[in-house]
Image (cartoon, rainbow, N blue to C red):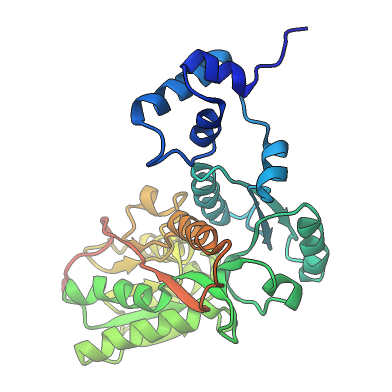
Length: 335
C-alpha cells in the first residue's frame, strides 16, 4: 500500500518549511509567505495529491470548520436550495463546510437538531427558513455564534438576514406606475404570511406617491387561484389595466385567464409577478421582482464567520435588496 503523503513531503517538493505549508493550506499565509512560495506550495500539494488532516487541524485550532444549519424545508424547497447553495459556496471559500439538518416543517424537532449539531462541535449555527418566518431562538441556540436566514427574531435579539420585502412590493407596483398605469389591482398573498404584509406596505407607499388608491383582493399563492381571481377581475366591467400578483404562480394563472378571455398581454393588460421563479417567470416573459436567495445565503455566512471569536452580532434585520426583472408583460396602458 502506498505511503500517505504528508505536509513534510509537500514542503520538500516546494522547497519551503513545513510551517509554511501549513500556513498556505490553512489560509494564514497572506502577509507572511511570498506569493511565489504560496503558489509553489499549492502546486506541490496538487501534484502529490496532498490533503490536510482536518481532524488534526481541528484539535490544534479548537475549531471544526463546520457550520450547523437547521432548516424547515429549505433542502427540498424550490427556493431554499438557492440559499443553501450560496451559503455552501461562501463557506467553502473560507474552508468551512455546512452540516444541514432539515425538519421538514416539524419545529418540535429543532431542539433535537441543535443538540446533535452541538455534539459535533460546530463552530456556529444557522437557522434557515424556506419562506420569511418569525422565529424566537431558544436559549441553547442563542448561546452559540448564530444567525437566522430568511427569518427574524421578533425580540430583535438575534440577527436575521432577510430580503427587503417592503421595497420589493414597492418596486413591483412601480413597474406598472412607471409604465403609466393608474388602474391597478393587487392579488395578494394570504395574511398569515409575513411577506404579504411587508409587500403590501411597499405597494401602498408606491400608490400613495402616485396619488391613487388601487384595489386589492386576497388571492393566495397558487396558479388555480390566480386563474379564478384573474378571470373575475379581467371579465369585470371595471377591468384594470394592470395586475400585480402575490407571486409568479399567481401571475401565471392571470396570464392564462387573460388568454382564455381573448385579452393580450401586455397590450390589453399588464401583469407583474413576484419571486422570479426560474421555472415560471423567464418562460412566460414575466416582469417580476426577484428574491435574492443566493445572496442571502452568502451574506449569512459572511456575518456568521465574521462574528466567530468576537462579540456577538448586534441583532435586528440585515436586509438584502430585491432585484427587478423587466421582461415582456408590462407596457403602457392602451386606454
